[in-house]
Each structure stands twice: as C-alpha cells, then as structure tokens.
Length: 141
Image (cartoon, rainbow, N blue to C red; front, side, top):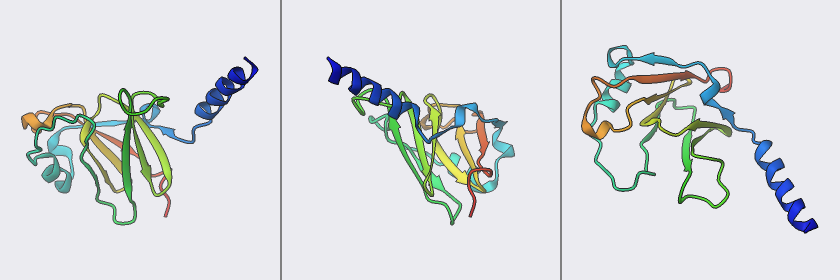
C-alpha cells in the first residue's frame, strides 16, 4: 500500500512540474484568410487529403532557424497521458495547445498559426478563421 501511494504521488508531482507553456492561456489574434501572409494563404489553400487516421497532422516551420515538431496525446495514444492536447517542441521549448484546433499548424516569424476549422479537407479555407499566437517572448535566437 505504501508503494502505491508513493507511486501515485510521484505521478502527480511529475505531471504538475511540466515545463510546457500552455498556449491556451496566451492571447490569440483571430484572422480571416485575407489577413494571412501570402505563404500561409498558399499552405491553407492546399487541398489536403482526407485521412482515416485523425492523429496525423500537417506541421510546417517557415522559420529557417526554428525546428517545429509535434505530437498529440489523448485517447489511444498513451496510458498516462497529459490530457487531450497538441504538443509542440520548438528548438527545445515545449508548448501545449488543447485539442479541437485544426491543422495545418504553421510557425512563421515566431508566431504559431492554426485554424478554428477542424476540417479543411472540405476545402473551406476561404471561410475559415485562423488563430495567431505570438511566441516571440519564448523563442530567442
């Protein structure tokens, strides 16, 4: 019994000491397609194939000095998950963003973009709303 209590306390401590920056708590700017930079318009207007695997996401870094990687946690991914979240690692800095955010996820000029539309495969990019999250304070060269 004592070992079980220590185990659960360890799990709680490890998950509460996460170094991830919660992007859901950061200010976001909502944009329409016409307000996006041209590079982003081109990416968002691409026809993305419908995939059966809803855990496969389109991720792009247009910042040559920043590598962007992504993974997703939630049902069917890990036994002890960090919740239903998107997780990004940008040059060693860790960020998380709640689910129900649409891809592609794009990093440009130290800003992370995503769409509020969950299904761009319907080719509704012209009507979609896009979110911009400024990461300048976290991404230093």
